[in-house]
Length: 128
Length: 278
Image (cartoon, rainbow over all chains, first blue to last red; front, side, top):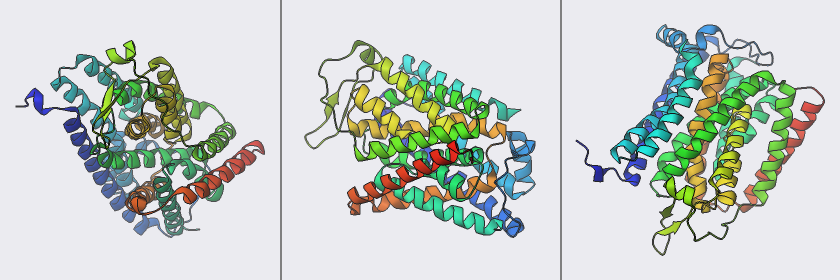
């Protein structure tokens, strides 16, 4: 399907650039929708972020966030948008690994896989 | 203040930070946390979480524009991302274990250093002409387009650059900034990478670095949707607007003014940290 010569570094970078832009656009749209819903409901409640209490446990992990978002809770939808945003660079790294494999550059497939594992590890807490 | 007013004010402030950050090339992230903590009195952990999110957005949004120019080097970027993501994890864990005053103190120092650096912009060091064996094995040498056709460059001192990147990642995870200044310093001055290549490659790396610490912040409950929403949307819109007018304006004076604002915020941050008010 892909010939090796099609996957020059520049071509890879352009695909990556478009991937990133699409991810950010999608994430920003979801955050905006969630934000409007949140403000429509709680816009006149007092703002207090001086005291730190941390987020409730359902807004700290994928499962809870997806549940809150599909329940159409504004804060849940915003959080889902932020998750999509965080997933964008991870998708970029995954695609880079694929592209290096297409170039048969196994050293960089390994390097990229290592970066991918570090990213997965950092997100591990939010899969709970 | 109700949530609607709070959101509008934060979105406006974030827009301005993103706009000036893109226009001056200094990045908006560095003024965002002081803005949120000093002016809006937001807890510094929420502020850092929101800033990280905006850093991912601007870095990823700008990448599409950069790659078309053909300056960034994805091999250098990917290799150094091992260091920045490990550093980012370390920074995120540090953020949970040190006091907010200590975070404020480090932040103040970084602001002062950024202000100093922005008035002494890096210039292209004389590029060495001999290839370095390690950089060659890692396939890092490359070329970039110039007026007189493609110009090739050799990368040097990979271990020292890797070490500095570990530090840049740690700062990024602790303070929620892109640490573009440290990244450019490592690539430009230490590894001898041409300025254009180092700045675009650095931008490319910032999103991945920030994502590594954002994952930890999220599972700790430091990422608040109510604050992150106006910050992310404001900074993103501001930086896109800034990039659009960038070509039409002379930025030397603006850069000096913005550097002065950064320095003032740095002094304010240090004062608040030392007097225990963060």
